[in-house]
Amino acid sequence: MNTAELAQRSRSGAVWAVLNSGAKHGMDLLVFLLLARWLTPQAFGLMALVSTVLVVVVMLAELGLAEALVQRKRLAGVAVDTAFWLLMGVGGVLAMGLAALALPLAQVYAQPDLAPLVWALCPLVMVVSLNAVPQALMQRAMRFRPLAVRGMVGTLAGGAAGLGLAWAGAGVWSLAAQQLVAAGVGLALLWTQTDWRPRWRFSPAAARQLLGFSRHVMFTRGLNVVASKVDDAVIGFALGPVALGAYAVASRLRLALEQLFCQGIDAVALSAFSRLAAQREALAQAYLGATRAAISLALPVFLSAAWLAPEWLPLLIGSQWNGAMAPLQALLLAGLLQAFLHFNHAVFRAVGRPQRSWQLGLASLALNGLLVTVAVRWGVQAVAWAYLLRVALIGPWGAVLACRELGIGARTFWRTSGAPVLAGAAAVVVTLGLGWSLKPVALMSGTGADALKALLAWLPAIALYGFWLLRHSPALADLRRRPAADGSRSRKWAPGASRVSRPA
Image 1 (cartoon, rainbow, N blue to C red):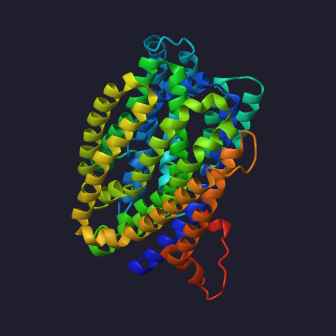
Image 2: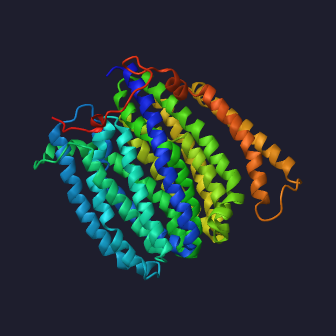
Image 3: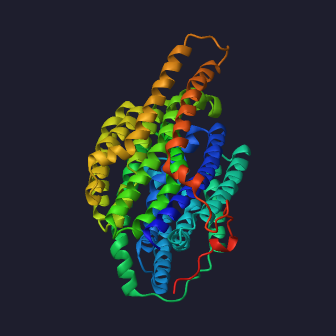
């Protein structure tokens, strides 16, 4: 595949991945908002306490082997089989270890209900191990549409199970059921979309080669995951599950918005960057293009949420979550900054410098632990601002290192990413001006008056930004102009094209 063809497939894949990922995570966000309306902060706090350990174990169960399989230029079948059996063995050990930690975790947090939740969620570890190899093969083949469809169906199934149990009064167990059903359905669909099946073979040499790359990925991811959960662990221990529930809802909303636009681009970026590793100039252009796309999408999403959330979220999910509004705005600003810097780690992996990622992760973990430990005495809002400060201090340094690896100067980076930033700043000015002018106007009486004013101030600005995006987005312009491969005006998807066969 030459550079031009790869760029074309990457742009097309990115558009499809973002659209489909947006649909999946949009449904996930809708389900989450309904669950938040029916459940209490205590329920979300208990699930957040479980997640402080569960996400670390799940991360370890992946071993970073999916990225290693995607990154390799040539992939032998024995290496794929070796990765699968390695994942299965590690996943089984970790699932049993998690089950053994259930009672000590419940004692540490003085929450007896934690232990049954941990035991119920242990199968998620094995689901991750079973998912990793077929998902990596589909990403390697840049088959993102069937992956997104599988995610949407799993989200619908899990959402239906969670909402049904929440309506029946199951409390925190509705959150557990949502995760288990979504994971199980997604696993079943994934294995029907690939022809690959593991063989009974294992190569120690292939395992060493894969782990030689994946250990950096796993270490980096582990540091980032632990750093992201330090605040939850400290809040749960110092302030209890109710306060943690408010913070967890704010964090979940921030994560949902990040997944809406960034996850699809991220999947394409890892595959495309790995294939351009030997062509630094082409890789630099791909990095700049992905960064511009992320910035263009992140600005309206996060700024709109920060503007509308204080007035609209209480109407949507109830007044019991008023304590989550202030930390939510700080976390949204942090999410916006993270979107700008989202592809740094993909660059480090592509150029064979994964140690850069874990070095940044180690600094992030140390700084986050220090800031959160100091800030927790002033409550969850202070912890959220400490999180924002950590992102603002560590994140830009990662961009500097990525640009150095690719030979990108500060002027080039700003010339690529500055236009959407300026357009977003103009939209903010318009929104603030309209909000200030509408403040003394009596549009209606009742609790929805402020929400209506916020919406009216937001709509013109988002329309102007959307018009700018349609006019100046390279990906959208390419999608409008590019004909199909056979010269026709449309390109239909053949179901058989989504399947991934066994490597030789």
